[in-house]
Image (cartoon, rainbow, N blue to C red):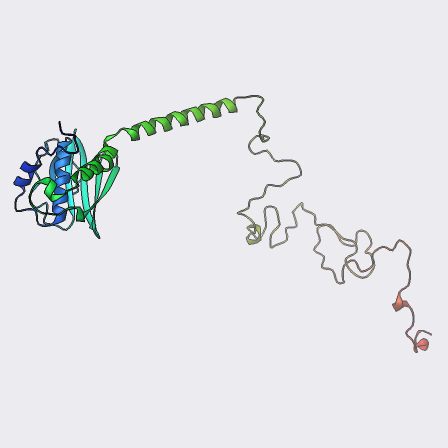
Length: 283
């Protein structure tokens, strides 16, 4: 009994039905691929790449008319009411085939050397002497990847893993002994701190009255914010208490802190002594 890779039943009839349509080596490869797809339960719906299928489309075991007239190939197939699209493109010395399962978007591909085709007419063994390798590659790399349920199994395993992870996370949140970051009620401000909006820096400078932290461009006499008063501002020496009224705008008319307190007392500096040669000017 012939094995699946050597059983060529039906190919000779398929070849006779395409007489006059085989014009190049790529056509022979597409004929072999089509015959093998039909052998595995696929039926052809015609040329094109439309992803819509009508319930009335049953498909055929024959290749549609004009299938070999273009440089590239695009054929639609149906199996078990599922739509498949076969596309073939010549690349250098190879013919690259892609089979798309429209429902799941699964794609399989195979690369067939064009030089494996030795003749355009004759028995399959005369057309492709190593046709067994071609059929094995079609089965393993083109048909089986889109006809398995691996995608469903992976999706189920992923869903189960996510469910288990969510359950463990809920158990961890309900654990009263779990140590985590300190939780504060929304809106609570720590005493001594000021909330800072990182996107609002400099915003108060555009507000003349500065109703917020940082002040504004104009002085508000009713503001309760009292700027710090440095008694050393003004003329050399300290100003007496009350010299600058509260909330008054005071512009210093001397360098600040020019006469800091001296713990050793008032020690005269060089400016308290008469310059050399000018003794009489202080008489």
